[in-house]
Image 1 (spheres, rainbow, N blue to C red):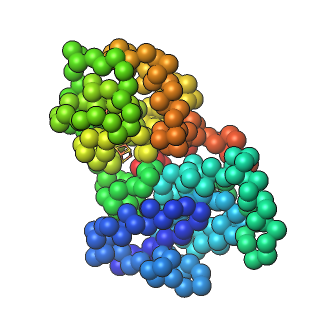
Image 2 (cartoon, protein in one colour):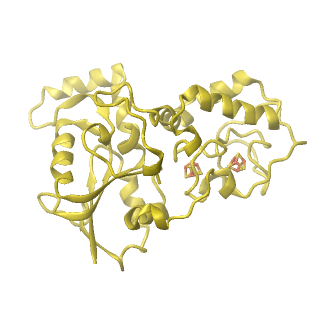
Image 3 (cartoon, protein in one colour):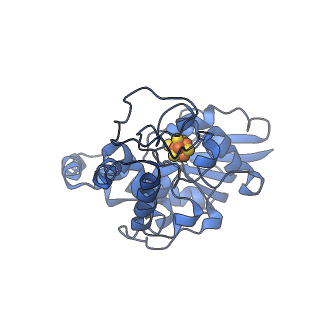
Length: 287
Ligand code: SF4
Ligand code: SF4
């Protein structure tokens, strides 16, 4: 039986919960390390190392570099490991100031100047975007991307129909109004970004009536593009299907519900703002 471990750096543990929601791997893989489930002092030698969370402090960096030396294959799992995610909000000056006071306490790991994606510290074999990735995607990362079949876009997995003659004039709030079944959420005035977002999750959000916020990151066509290209593309989709003013769409895309995930659309181009960054992520390594 193949072996794997999950190394958790600074993150929310959502990726681990998603993994535990799947039973598919139990017959094929032996889990040797996962904090709170099966942990020893250090990560043992494994065939696959799944890493969740960003490199936020010196303890994260130490644990990551140590674990990678014993791993056959390294997978960066989820938004935090790939782009910083929630822990990178601590890069904002006002949050950082709060934590600098804490740094004076003893026995607390020291914050690094910025939250870093794991590939700025170690080599990564596979990127698995999602917040969190679905159990099926996690299984795909374990077995290897060759066996995993996915559509290009979330829209192709959603099943809702885009209509030319249902043109909303205003944007609805994130969870406002009644959602009609089968019809594209954009036609109903919701800010859904499934047309730019990488497929593979099987579109659980729009299928359930919630707009896709782009947690799977950019499609292959957008990975090596600057965020302005993505912005133009999404505006074009809204111009085709709605009469909503462009400023309203732009303000919506910059709102907190979307900004957390959408910043990673620019980040795949290469996280230029962090030390060790600046290299575009290779498409063939993204599941
Ligand atoms: S834009 Fe959203 S709701 Fe419309 S088809 Fe795409 S994923 Fe589905
Ligand atoms: S539908 Fe969008 S927001 Fe939902 S899981 Fe898929 S990529 Fe993430």
